[in-house]
Image (cartoon, rainbow, N blue to C red; front, side, top):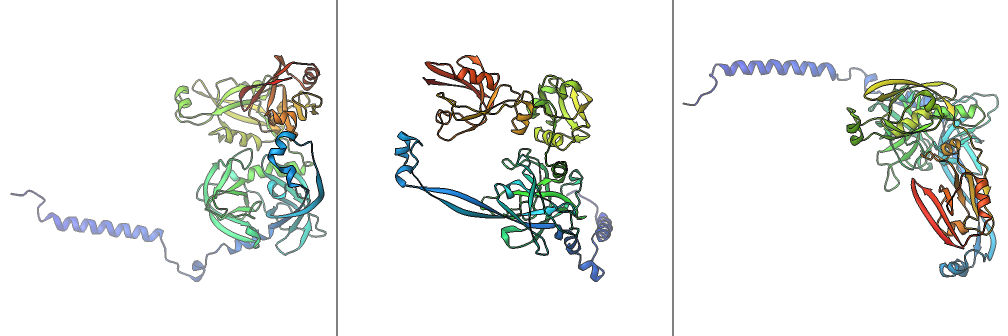
Length: 477
């Protein structure tokens, strides 16, 4: 005989299911409410846009490009291989005007405007067009290639301009509603909506800090420099880049956080110079393997592997092997986050650095000072009959390393630029190479390099460091 539940249990179970379903339906009804008024069916971002849009401007730039026409014969690679650039039969100079467009955000009622550095890079003329169609010539107050930000100023007589207040970008959370306002493709001011898709996102090649707000609000060419605003109408980011294979929006856009924007505005108000704090230490992001070897629960933080002698980190008590996990209470998951956090702090103040040492949490107080210009860079262009002729070189210092965004602790002489077709260019040297030794003798300064170069050698052996690798070049004299 088949065993099972008694027939009498069936009605009881049915009643129980009905009661539970009724309770669930009532719960859902409480959270999902049908609109009961005309006002509720007409919820809109329009009031927010009316308030914020007048502070977003269009930026038009003009750049005069000069080029010279040459005969095709002298552009032939076969000819140039043997004769180089010594023959320059140049024709009449031609002038060509390049136009570009972008967006900007007014951040003070006296005409201070933030945009992207790449929007105004190389511009000879910059025109700002307000939402009410008034046009003004703009002057550049600050250019900061490292953050891809620039600050402009326009003069408006006897009136105050609408502007956006900055919001703490650390208050954002994934899922928050945001609006992007700008001038895509030059069609005019356009508003798109979306959410914060991710935070602390890395977008290589955009700026030197690689720390962005990611949004799915449509961002297209021309939106660069425009506003990303929160649901309370405040500026949380400057729209900067998109991830796209075809040039259009694929729903992945990046904005520079307002906390970084605030530091650039602060520099603009202090005469245009941006001075960032220097920690005096370098490190590497903690990955899964490092976390296991260090006994950490999660692969997060920055392992300190280099400390500058008598720098801020050394004086604060840092030790090799410390793992930086917070800065002023904010999590530091990797090197990009650490650089971003340090860059948004103010010189002259102190920061509380949370570290893990030997498995124990410790807090250290770091004095925030600018990177020192020691030794002075002593810029020089090498001349004479030697393999480095045509190279622009300088003494390395912490200040120059920070300026070049080079993640190394090095001393000596660096090549900043190479003249095209110069001996150094032809033997394969590059800007950023650090000169270490010449024929076995250490190159500790530009002065030492110049003294070594006036000697006669049957062969030149040049030792360099490039991207952390040691290379040696041998050139017959």
